[in-house]
Length: 322
Image (cartoon, rainbow, N blue to C red; front, side, top):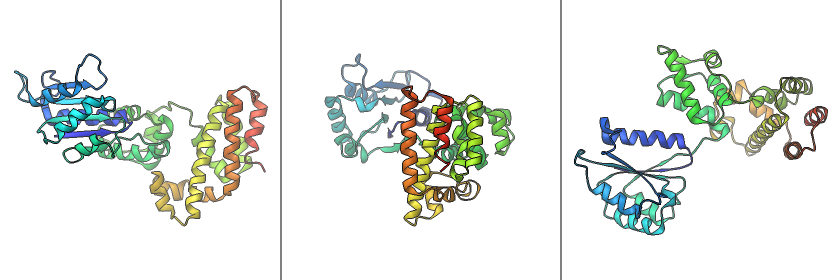
């Protein structure tokens, strides 16, 4: 069994490595004599390719077979890569997992592996894909259903840290082992926000272009201690999202298809949050100007040009009050 992991999601790669060792070694997965972890950039290993081939072709006196994991494989030397390419052509019967951050499909090494290995993509979900990932991970990997609004809350509260989200959801499962579904109320009770969720609180009035509700929420956030830079970042991310939605709507793409492309729950996207309507509230040229202005505000705050509460509040209010 040869497995190739490609991507930047450390959480997903660690999970798949653990599965690989469990499947190939069973109860012996933690036995140092049955498993060998090799780092491609380990300066103490004279030839990484020789170490891999020797480990895969031999077995320990105390273990009938050995499973090998190559970490940071994108850092292989050219000579090691060439040696492995030649070895893969022999179609070795080995328990080997190679972990890459990047591996071009046009590379000789990828082509040598493609016929004998199982390739798995391990990309980190983008911010707008997190709610979908929370739902998929909770229901598929952890075996518990979750309400769409609970998944949205967890994604907004914890960000893109997959390991943190996994541990927090497992905490819910531990405290409520007999539960059948994770509700929004349960998620709010058991999971405290690890980041400011200004976007979750201000995006409705911003999307509606409701100047009264928007300025009221903006003042509440500033009064509660939310940093201006966080509000600017949240609004900029949401404005870009609305721009993407508006652009797709103008190309006659259905709301259901847009929700799928964004990794959003279709019911939340179209009914509860009604993001297509919010996107159409903003003409594309105006959205582009707002995004540009938010970028300028970000730069001004970081450089100390916009350093007063009143100046920041007026600048942010002007985005909607026209």
